[in-house]
Length: 517
Image (cartoon, rainbow, N blue to C red):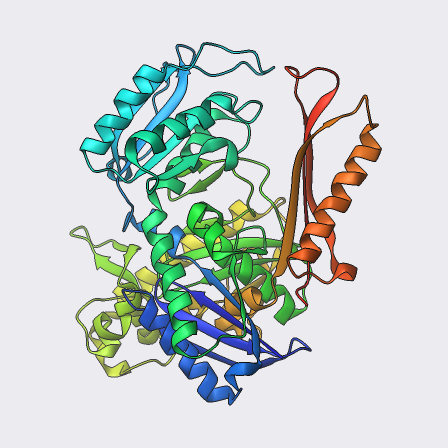
């Protein structure tokens, strides 16, 4: 029995096959295509060809992707949306997308704040203004908007108004409308939770492309015996239907997979992982073998969010990053990238765009394509570009450290060839075997999860007993989803008192995860 792990990056699609002992049988890189499908199919065919594994022996197929992260960072393929906030008059002082860059604010076709919402203890601020909600949804329908983001003040405590607004939206705009509800995505903190919901709403087209591409490629290659999963950003797996509904949960799943894959390949339990792709560089931290979870609002492409995810820093630096010489003689690197077109547009591949890869070839750091074509780059320009790259990475490493002490670095990702050997702040630099496909390896060894959420009255059943009951429910759900019982562990737990309910009622959420059978 074999596991297939595929990770779709902005530039390359990586594929690996691992056996029951978690040994890497084959790993390959294949250029990502504009429609996702061709890249996945090409990577799949190549890894099958190299390994010689029979298609019927592949029983599990996992897909991880940075497509959603890249879409936000590069402002590409984001869908037009409508934004409805329920919170007038209390929240009118701060408009939606207040601290967003202008270039990404354009995704909002319309935005409104209507009456409704709750206090921190669940008391109603104002009744839901259904007339205003109807008027907004009718306006969005006329403008042919297909996706709506709905947020409400303190909806994590009480979400009735969000659910009622979603019902009205479906009634007016149709069942096919993509509706993102903030209480299902983020945690406490209206602005950050609303931001995450807006991004989720804008990513539906991206999610549709990569889920359909994966399903079609497996079917076309005759892999019909495999259970199919998508990687999410807590290091566990979800179904394709869940990924289409909550594409924001795939944000940072690429670096999460890379962190897990880097830890597995290097055998290091504590280190900073630098995953360099063709478009972005993602930095994460391994703590005791697991990705460090962010305890603060996470910024994705300049947008502050607060849904739970690993502590990852993404910067616009990759092998395909465009290098420019400015009129004053200074040199810039990125954030834009030629992406999957690097084999056509980079100088060393016969193109006319100077990229970070060309700079690395010019400086003799790697051998790719026709190195003679990189000789057109003046050495001074190449050195300035490398200093910019070095500075970007060193600043990012400093941002991830919790002390001034040097840390171990693990370099993974095909684009890591552009990084210098010496990096200030590093105690040691490791580049393990199969480093180029660490993300696909992390995807292949991901766990499957089960989540329990319900209301529990601690007056009827004491807190400790209630939480234990919820843990057992989550474990059973993980086992039913395919996890081996002996490997299941609790990875997330919270209970929130609900003051508006009678007695000592709490909303309990527990998540468990274990290895796939």
